[in-house]
Amino acid sequence: MSGSRDFQGIYTALITPMTSNHELNEEAFREVVEFNIRSGINGFWVAGGSGESVLLEDDENSRMAKIVTDQTDGRAKIIMHVGAPTTKRAANMAENAAKAGVDAICCVPPFFYGQSDEAIAQHYRAVAGAASLPFFAYNLPSATGCEITPTMMSLFQERVPQMEGLKHSAFNFTYVREFVNMGLSCFIGFSALTLPALSAGAVGTVDGAPGIAPEVWVELWKAFQDGDMERARAAQDKGIAVCNLVRIGSFHGVLKSAVSYRLGVDCGTPRPPGMPLSTEQDETLRQRLSELDLLPTEK
Image 1 (tube, one colour):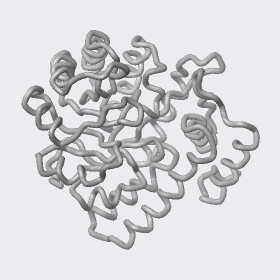
Image 2 (cartoon, helix red, strand yellow):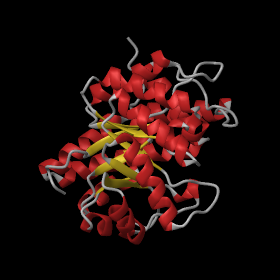
Image 3 (cartoon, helix red, strand yellow):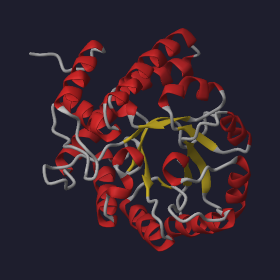
């Protein structure tokens, strides 16, 4: 991994805090951003999978870009997700995000209708061109039904001048090394695999779990940079325990409840059709957070 990379380190895939009416909660959103910055993260991945991406309105996406840029105030990098089924919608959100002052754009392949590699490449070219910022592909086949392979990324590199790299949230781990060898900035999308991915040349991790305990992954990153593998492995072990929390209930339900407990700020529940945690699941989550020493100390 090159130390000269503009985008590297621990990037929290932010949740989207919501009010009781499932509207964007700006005050809580700002507090979540600030909590992560104070914890030492390097950047944010905004309105992605952990942020309930496709359940957001386009104008909410643009509003979030303005809020996070204002709150961050240059203290962390911002990669804004603008994925949508149509090129026009994604390009419009990319343009608005660029105007808000984000550092880069990311985008899943257009989903629902299967598209050819060339169609996806042209989609990315239009979206990236609308922002004229570094561009990241978002490899999330579990949600999009499209797995981005090294062959596809090679085509995207040819078609998209702004192509910087990708977030790799697919299970073929061997691709990490191939993407790195192509000169791409490859973030691993599974934070439980941060350490092996860094060892393979990944530039960092982007995931929702670090939003629960950003300090754990910041410690892992610093230890790796220092060449202290014992420290790095210890941090990765705790990170895996944090990642395992999502098995308690729905992904977004766990993330929002866990962050709410850590900050003492109500981040709401998932936007419908997403379901909140049951009372039993919520109690289990609180107990596990306590066991991991991730609850605020009573004063």
